[in-house]
Length: 133
Image 1 (cartoon, rainbow, N blue to C red):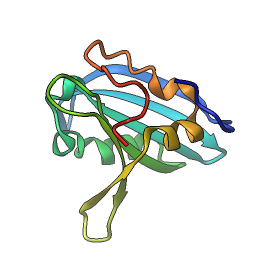
Image 2: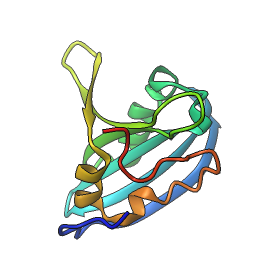
Image 3: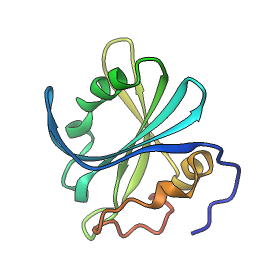
Image 4: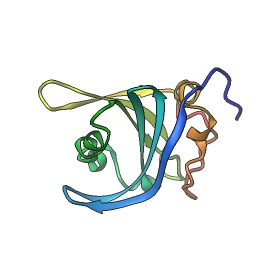
């Protein structure tokens, strides 16, 4: 699916199957775009839809620490598979330590980040680019 719009963001990281590290255990596909000076967007994909958002939440502070000089916008992507529709969500950290998940259309996010958003590299991602919207 073609993505229309301006997407000046440049992808600066594509780490497929990021696995366990101190403070977190699991697998995730982590991609990062520099959206403007001093700001990055991090998209965390749950691998093969077997991991849900709660599995990747502990990654947020670890990734925020890696980009400590930047404002970090987090997004979660669950790939579509034969069991469930995929979707994208914007993740917002609240003052009480909780994280709010807000559904966002894949095309809306792709217009911001560019067509590389849909290049998940996950063989089980059967989405067509609409992100479950």
